[in-house]
Length: 70
Image (cartoon, rainbow, N blue to C red; front, side, top):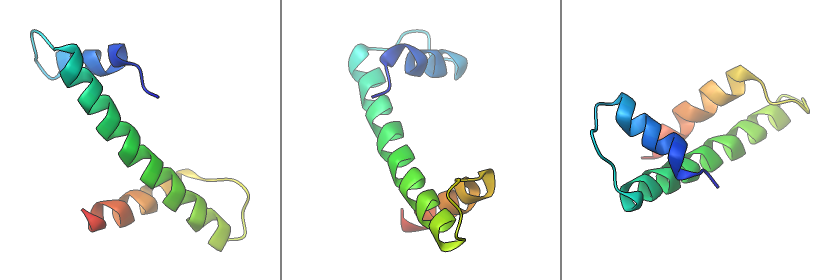
């Protein structure tokens, strides 16, 4: 699970002055859920290419596939 401190830093970089723990946890959950979907899709793509290693191109393609579902 993602910890809230890195997520809190993301908020700060985006310009937030203060961030509640609840908001940081909510964004962390959303990011983790999306990352799991992308990782699973990337794994499928590497399997289809008869590779054991997930490559950067698998992640890029998986992101397009997952975002197309949203």
